[in-house]
Image (cartoon, rainbow, N blue to C red):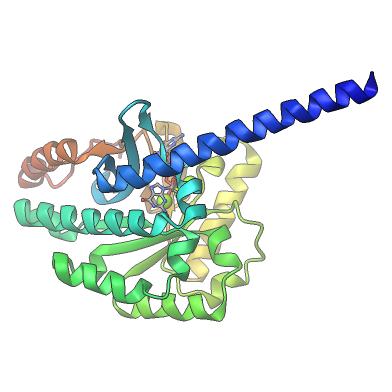
Length: 293
Ligand code: C2E
Ligand code: MG
Ligand code: MG
Ligand code: MG
């Protein structure tokens, strides 16, 4: 009996493994086509000043309009893209599209010149030998100035990286591109790397912002802000979902925020409507969103 059931288990396991492998292969094939067929789309989520509510820039977030499955979020396909190396052409597309879009907005809306765009970089992209040259080429092709581009790298991505990557990051920074640590606080880091890496921004992970009412999270965020000040880094709070979180962050002197309370990630056409409206706001008062004083 034991033997029989053991066998059945194996059979089940094999089937499950097999199905998983097939699904993964399908995803890989589909993703390859998606890149070629322009099924990928960028959404842009505003990053705003917590003091004034004014938009300061946008984070480009990729999503996939799958012909059968509909909308597929990045968490569902980026791991496969990263494993297979498809992340490199995908990332090239994202970078170019994002830079082009911001440049276009700058040409259409005079006040958009001060905006920045942030693009996420995966581990594999970061290690690619052509990284710096490629980014330079995209900037010159799209005619976007380097200081309008920020790159986001997660804490866990940066941690195990070599001297080689560190040098590349320093080169990017020398071009005028700013570097952000994404999801800050979720890596298991000793903080010593903050000194050795050339960084400009910390993006505090939304898990800390989510329950800012709890004493622990409040103290963690306070400590991060203090640390950032000491190291001369700017801070963006991720996942600001409520007015209370915003007010608490503001009281802690956190300068920048991103999250559903301020704005959701929006398609380019929606951003353009926002910028049009904003332009009128600017003419009148210079403030875009009415926040409590
Ligand atoms: P991330 O870089 O930390 O991006 C922020 C994520 O939080 C986005 O999820 C965004 O939609 C979500 N978010 C923003 N505000 C709120 C909020 O108030 N509450 C909650 N609950 N969530 C909020 P999304 O678009 O699903 O992206 C997930 C991750 O996928 C990103 O995390 C980033 O690591 C990665 N990613 C997205 N686009 C790209 C890309 O073009 N290239 C690479 N390499 N990674 C990307
Ligand atoms: Mg990010
Ligand atoms: Mg993040
Ligand atoms: Mg994240």
